[in-house]
Image (cartoon, rainbow, N blue to C red; front, side, top):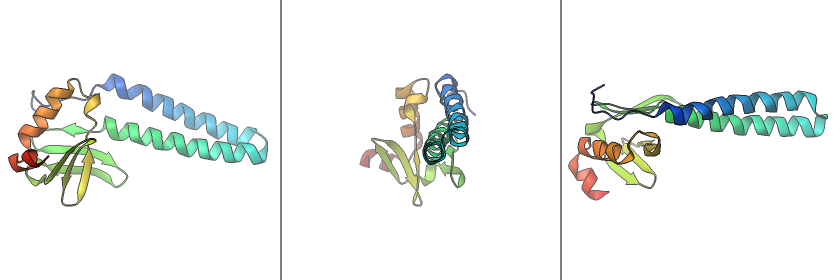
Length: 132
């Protein structure tokens, strides 16, 4: 990774992962220890919700911005978009599109939000930035 490439601030993501894993464990305990009708339903719904939150935190933590492009983990594995292939850019949420694939960039978790936006805009084709 080049020295000017933005880095994700790990301290914002790590607590989310810890909290999510703890929530999943608590809901699983509730599902097995509470009275059956309430415990199982509450535990399973709660565990599913906590799993989604945890997977979202993993997606944020896995976002990588490099000279070659941007990538992040998704449900389908690691998704990589080379800068030259980017055909769309939206600002709310900040996302890049290429070949029908979309990567939502969590700009708020980078050390400097304005710098990461400027970095991305300087690497995508200029026609894409003008149309955004």
